[in-house]
Amino acid sequence: MIDPSAVIDPAAELDEGVAVGPYSVIGPGVRIGSGTRIGPHVVIKGPTTIGRDNRIFQFASIGDDPQDMKYAGEETSLEIGDRNVIREFATLNRGTAQDAVTTRVGDDNLFMAYIHVAHDCLIGNHVIMANGASLGGHVKIDDWAILGGFTMVHQFCRIGAHSFCAMGTGVSKDVPPYVLVGGHPARPHGINVEGLRRRGFSADSLQRIKQGYRILYKQNNKLSQAREQLRELAGSSPDVALYVDFLDQSERSIVR
Image (cartoon, rainbow, N blue to C red):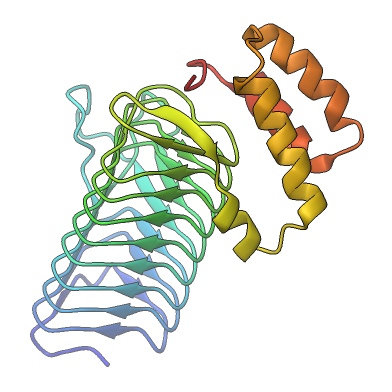
């Protein structure tokens, strides 16, 4: 399961069933769960924890130092959950002492070739980052969000659940749940209808989500007014409540 040419530090911890390809390098402080497969020429630096049944393809760089001028060698970490796919030349960096210390990735995510996850990012579950998509530091990506190829997300932004960023989108403000954005700078273009249908959202739920979108974007409301109207609507719709929770927590304002 472990190629003889792989270089694995004695202080790394690999569960039974971990496969490591030729010429991969795994440093001290790395823990890898059972069933995870590491391809050839992968570099993993600790402290990094990787869960079960992940697939990491050739030339990925996992858990290296944060690309932050303030970083001065402090011990920080990267945590990756289960069943993630990390494709060629992807880079995922550890956190910084100035923030959460840890970069965290959830479960069942797909990171395509050449993506970048910067320091202190928090990524949920079932997220897709297509080829070349990049996150600045301190970005939060909620569950089921999709970032199209070469999407660029400014530091400290948040991407809401079930949202969709079209190819080449430049994101400098928060993207609310369900919303489809595109362009540079990003602009709203409706809701992610197809994605929601694929995930089993009912026609009634879609109608309520569309109604929430109209309140937020189509009725010339100030953001404070939209928030209050959404709060009223959320009383009868848990799906709309996701809008309200997101707006209450937004620190950079939203794409409008």
